Image (cartoon, rainbow, N blue to C red; front, side, top):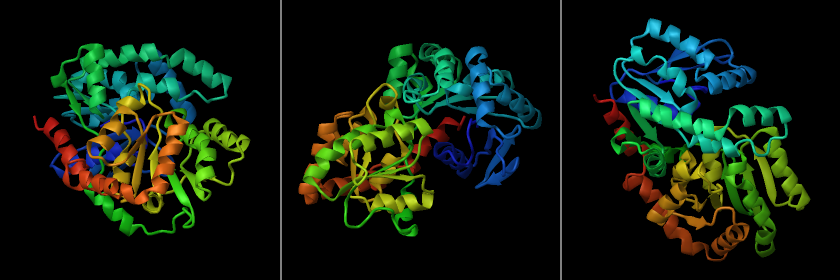
Length: 399
């Protein structure tokens, strides 16, 4: 496996690698080196080979530009050259579109399958990631080198060239079939499900939650970005606190400086400091306590061609928290919530609808207990879990 990120930090990559090891496969993960991490080690049976020297943000930025133009990331190209000298590679599993060109250059050295794992709709994602950035240099770089049309052509090109393509949701699979006329048999959907054993974390990690006990809490846990819909939640708070005086929105996580400033300015100009709390990054051990002590756990993503073609791990984590789930009407989120009657759905980007749904929960909370039970049951007993989902990954490599 090749991933442009820290391992084992990436949840999806880690679950895939460890599941293959558990099923008798030998897995080598190639990723960038980082200060303080060993170049080579074995974690939970997965062999990790970290390439190059410290892969700084500037190095990555330069390599991204070169990759955009030449379809080769020089950092990974050199690193993989040494990997192929020292290892016999049966299959090459490439995580996400940006490394597709670099890894395809080694196709002749791969004995069997070349697999492209698309974590998201990358060409559409780059339309939203940088919307709130202030730096003229960053805007210039992204306009010139991160052109969505160019990346869409890359996506089509490499989806056609790779032996198998993994999608995170059925919506992404249908998009590739419709847009690029791809053979459905070439596409495999392996979603971001959570292990059933994740429920144990709600008992194991009983740390003090940042959620106050005397408030009606609305919690978001995850990264901050323009596509996350956090501005919808913030703008809804005046209407919510008018009806629920002790309501409080907890934003747990972080984003880049521009994104955080944008959201904090929104809170400031609306005088919402008393009912919106920016908690910052919290380690994993504290997340289960936050989810399980919140009145409502929200995933308020805006609906666009990026968010409509992926799904976050936290959806299934919240479903195991035995607290109420509220999601926006992004297609995959809505599909899961409505299929199992497992949560409340509000219209993406609609501040009033979000507020009205929160107020309704507060006024008739007992009416929503069945949704909490349905969410838990969907993961534990109806197949919406990684134990079931990972079987498709194992089958892919049983060739």
